[in-house]
Amino acid sequence: KIIIEINNILDGKAKFIDQKHELATYAPKINKSEGLINWNDDAKKILGKVNGLFPIPGAFFIYKDERYKVLKAEIVKNQGNIGEVLTNDLEVACGDNQSLKILEIQRQGKKPQKIEEFILGSQIKKGASLINA
Image (cartoon, rainbow, N blue to C red; front, side, top):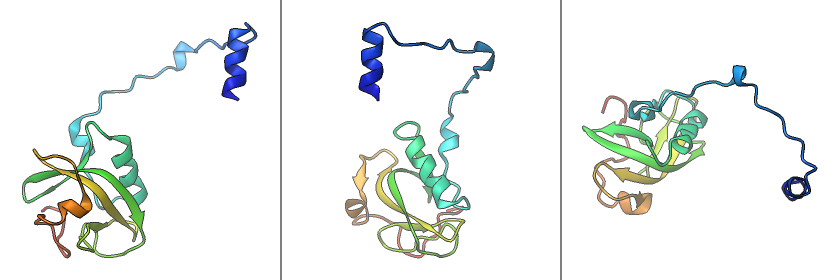
């Protein structure tokens, strides 16, 4: 389909539609604070935030006064208390009885790490709560 349309443009056969300027909207700048993860949200919404705000400003959580940016994650079916770390490889319970498995993370002031590397030296262990931590 794209190739056909490119050929139409090159052949002068393409039909363009003018933008209706009265329907255009302004998108405000995204603030860093909008990246704060609310574990009460559905896992799908949190994953959308992780993907949508990557790489800048990024989706993040605070644990013991340190900022952790979630770079990659996936939804899994584990359940637990909202914001609770369910496994040692950082699956966190969300508000819809699903959880988010963090695959790649970046600790404040550090380089990005795959979760397998991160957990070797992490203070965040199974059972920890990421709500008001």
